[in-house]
Structures are given as C-alpha cells and as structure tokens.
Length: 110
DNA sequence: CCCATGACTGAAG
DNA sequence: TCTTCAGCCATGG
Image (cartoon, rainbow, N blue to C red):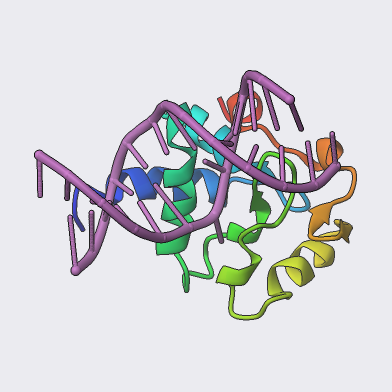
C-alpha cells in the first residue's frame, strides 16, 4: 500500500473499465492518466499486476493492436485465447480489425 | 548518481 | 507494413 501504487492503481482502474470485447493501448491509458510519455510505465504496471485476475490485462495491447505482452501470461497463447473468447480475432499476434475494437478511455471514459 | 531493462511510441528510411 | 533509432520514465542493482 505505497504511494507508488497510486499510478499502478490508476492503470488498473482504467483496465478494469475496458468493455467486454474491446481493447485499448498502453499509450491511450497513459494519456488518459496524464502521462502520455509514460506508456512504458503502463506496461510496467501490467507486469506488476501479473497474477491479478481481476485486471483484464489481455485487453491492453500496443498501438498497433499487437499482443506483445502475451509472453507475460501463464501460457504463451493464453492472452490470445482470452481475446478470442471475447469475440476478437487474432492473426499473427495482431488483432484483426483493431480500430473497430479499439476503446479509447479519453473519449469513452472521460 | 550511473547503468541496464522494459507488456511503448513516433519518426525516418 | 517492416526495421531501426531515439525519447520516454519507473524500478532495481
């Protein structure tokens, strides 16, 4: 329960608000939190949340819609499997029709 | 304080 | 779209 968790907590809070079947990017979350240049920190926060099933980290991908964080899940294809379970299509570790499934917290959460 | 690492992003070729 | 490079900043040694 440190102050440092405040930043992580905000990231988790946004991640938890990602609608079912939708995805967003690290940069989008970072920008929403007022730290647009700290997209890597969002990824770092996700890394720290590993093990917390209450956080849909699988709905957070990079700006290209590529599931670069899949290696951080229990299984290599767990992240993809979770996304496909929500109706998303994955091709070559990339979300098909990414723009249509993209959920921007700055536009939909603000 | 310096250095390395990283689930990122944007620009350039 | 891909590759490469630089900027970004929190965390850890």
